[in-house]
Length: 594
Ligand SMILES: [Zn+2]
Image 1 (cartoon, rainbow, N blue to C red):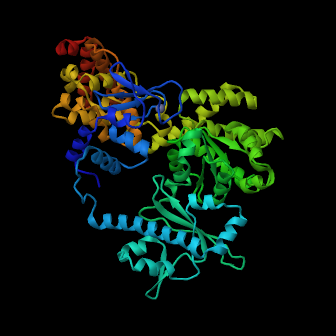
Image 2: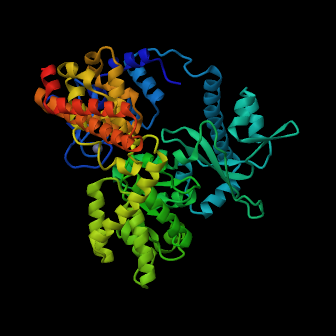
Image 3: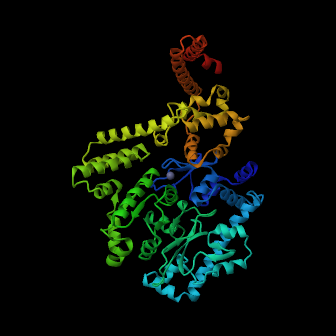
């Protein structure tokens, strides 16, 4: 549940965005704003701007933007409530305690506590009575240092070891069963994990939220070699990456990250000095995982097994990356080597060489699909290539990759673009037909990156948001349906609902609270406006949008008249619209406004 809006506002006004961001990044004054290198993408010249007057930030390189809460959420990888809490603490504001229901709050904190205690308990086991397990880990060349860093532990051979230990801690029954660490049979509670080496899984801010357990005794013939604790209130595996908590600083330092498949791969690779590494958690890589990683670096290397399954998984991972504007490199290990066996046989330097010559996604597709072997293979490869290219949202980046792959595959750029457009139109049509009852908002997710609304929409809103006082007279004439972009429509309806528009838009950072994270980047773009106000331009833009809307109405009504020629009401409506258009073109409203 969200905190009360009044409290959110208090916290916001007590935390000057310039000071807050200044605590994380070196800010340099630049005119009315401050400027620095963007922490969310890699760049050499600063395009990350902070506006003290509007209390917002905006990166003109990668498009990220938002207010003081958004910044903390992005930078610290925390959720909205956590950002409010952090900033309240910073400003010495006391928050009301029970914002989430007491029961749920207790469940949350007890689950974290159970996992924390379980982790300490397992670690202790390994040190105290884990000689055999340690021997196993050492035989797999996992060093004591790595064991310590990743807090590897041991679930003992007893069936009720952890549950007995935790029972003394007075946790609620609900937390016990929700934790997923126990099973209940005939009224008795058993540990889910026993005789297993335990790998704790951390959230990126360092809380233990899950475990993976591995059998280690030679005679142990249980079917499940690995066993993972289940998802629960505090753990959804698609949102987390194994190792990230321990390696995020290396990722930031090295400005790149390796993604491996499993946690043992990760430990091995890490030990060989490749500390900027993460592993997806026993699942195919997810978009959420890539988004999480992209906060640290967009320079991503996929390092999967050198077999058919590994190549397939790489091909899938590429798509997930491209959808999230990450352009991965693919390290192709020789046939039938995984990172573990490769390091054993060839060592660190050779792996570095493989990383240095990693493939771009289009090169990988060519090799993986064996495009040079036959025309059929080449066709198949190009098919896959188009599938990938059309996932790229940014038109400039897309063009770059089209050029590169056109040269590599020796297919003309025109033909590649033609194929992409054909497929885009197909998916766009499919999307549009799904949305047929909302003809105004036919912007598919695929098209969102392309046009940001029709001509003049963005420019007009920039004026309204930045010069509310000057635009006040024009506001009654502004309607959401003048806009084609759903986010713009939303913005206009929010603005129109305000009693005091001037006061409202003066607090740009507050306006952002109405939008979802992926919309904020878009809206904050409107707020950084360096230009001057011009009444003529404002009226021209408004006029243009009104006329465009009326013309659409006219088209609609013409259609209706064709279908119902005897409906005189429609004819009358048509006349009214035509008259309005005529007036607008003659500038009657312009005069009215000035
Ligand atoms: Zn940026």
